[in-house]
Length: 199
Ligand SMILES: [Zn+2]
Image (cartoon, rainbow, N blue to C red; front, side, top):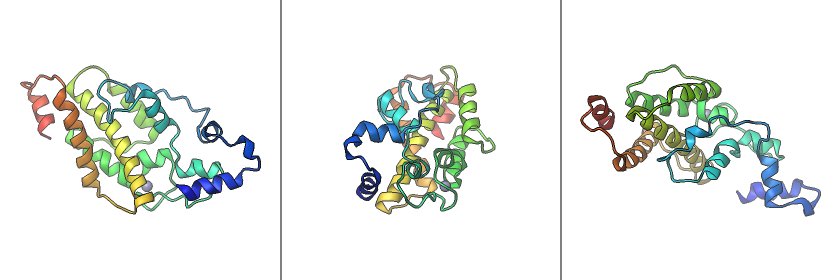
């Protein structure tokens, strides 16, 4: 990211103002109220990050649309599907690659659902991820895993030039959920629970 940082520094006319805080204040979106923090901060989230880390990732992701607003000029295209402008909403709901990943995760949980916009997805999650059933726990783990691995894949493609398939990313999410579940206490005799664990 050195070249991006260099452009950012060069675009500033007042060098005294440059600090980590100044950069942070310019990148983050002040107006956006994050009503979905409870979805990403609960015991057993993936990976083991603090609330502040999760909030920083989800609320202030340096997606290309935000970087361009910040004055960093770069290609704004989505690196996952090669079409569409990279924004949070695109990366996690509109992107074909991300949709295939999330659809596969839902199918593994026995759920089928038409693709939703980002705000509708959040609404759906808030509405449905309640209670302490195994399915709810798996969906919470899977969703945080989905956010993490989609962003990781975006970064790998952007900075490393490596590509993973939908199937590989789905496997990574499943494995991270599996590891977390292995430590949790659940009713293994429950038929639904057993099926979810096998899938
Ligand atoms: Zn895309």
